[in-house]
Length: 96
Image (cartoon, rainbow, N blue to C red; front, side, top):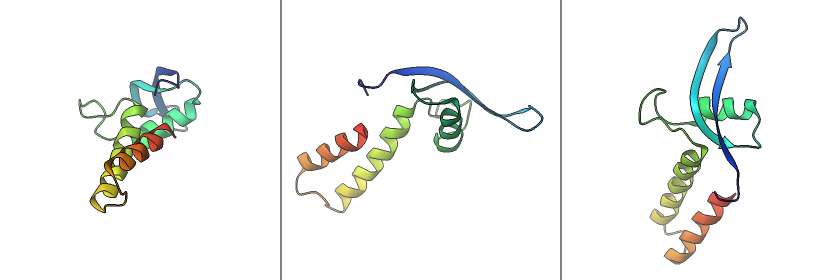
């Protein structure tokens, strides 16, 4: 994550009349992301209920959750020959 610049923003989606239908403040996203990308990812892919401590607040958390799930599946199915191979896959997938 060190190679990417990060910033905190508010994800906000409004309807046709301008009423806010989704909002989450202080979310951490890459600086190069558009506001639209922020809004979509935060509203659709962050886990947990908004306003609770369990709610994800960073794209880093989202990436870690997805990568760790895929790595756990690979480990369970013994997809890789060694633990070192599995960890390398996990690191490379996170980097993507």
